[in-house]
Length: 321
Length: 204
Image (cartoon, rainbow over all chains, first blue to last red; front, side):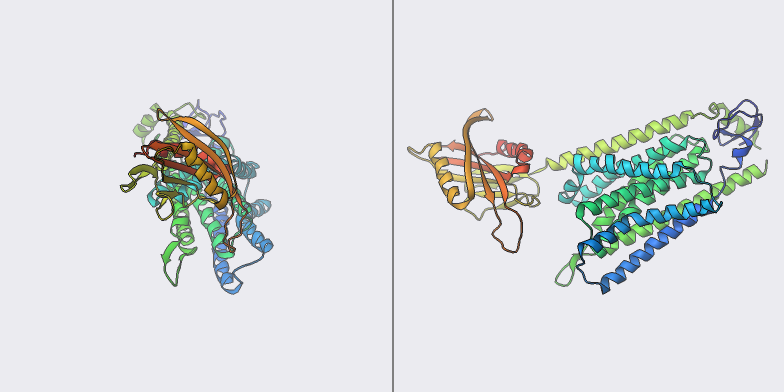
């Protein structure tokens, strides 16, 4: 579905040129036509490396918890917790900016803006709304298991995911810096990292530091619960930006992301309640974090595969022109 | 190139560079879905918060609806004590006592008896007011009080808590039914509406 037009504007830069081409119900100038289906391997590599480091940190913490005494001092405990909350996002940004400094990747100044904006919205809007105004945590601890699941799916998921979606949709999505499908992943992940960093950091500060094993694994679980939906949001926004898709496509994607966020937040705490008897304490920090990490890996793989496939299809169609 | 497909896509195509009708509709639908999910979730929360269980004591001849999940205790010098197991540091609670009040015994005598007993049992017990208040079309006597609750367990280190309380006395023939509400000072007003619902549900 493409053709040369003479009276149209490019959907990315909005410029009128004599050679405008239609693809998927949108129009492109020659510069942006071949750009939107570009793969940016560095974005995937940076994310893979960061997620791998998170996995290593989880394993390292598991081993350290067997060696170190159960009760540590407040200061090291706080330092470890803050490290878990902040370092993964900083590593992700650092890898991207190092690549940009070497000229292998072009990064917009709006990337850190999206990161900071997401952190601010989490700290000043969604967290106060959920925790203080609705007192959701209090209700979730007191209510039945089915209500906890529904509460996470119907309240936490939609609020968190709508915030992440709105940050990308109303800042960068409809601007000339959003030039590739992969940019959806880039900006949604930046929003997701900012959002989860703020949520985790405030969680740590509120409690004055967390226990080495349970606390750290909970932070990793929460990080996965925000990053996996961010990938879904990034995928649907990136796909929809360069094709005029049916009206239900974007809402369906955002709803799927909301369900994913709610389900992971529920699983991150609920699955940790285990057998209670004379030898077992009824709590293990592992099931929640394992499910969260596996889900993140699954979503990451699926989004990577789908996006690569769509880009290959586009390249093939444009190549046959 | 498939010309018919292209023509079909061009018919519904938007002005270039702008949002399409599908984009605008999708944008509105995302907001609508988020709002709908939130409304559904909040109504579920409200429904769950207002859920009640029925308490019935045939021997004392009383029944009432109390918040779901609260714990019922009938082993004290009261008919029943119903407590919120999650409340910290002081467990928000309702108590129902039956006090014989035949002959010349007035409601004031009943309240004085309670005050005397609490003055010895509770630290810093103070009565604030005794008023006549309308409840469900009838005038009932209500006594407001406060005391300090300190956990005697030496292994639980916590600061003493100021507790506010309220007795509502119902004269029922030759007995007085005393319904008491007690909660930590900071959550007393917040939970008062739930107690009023409990009181309104009381049958004797």
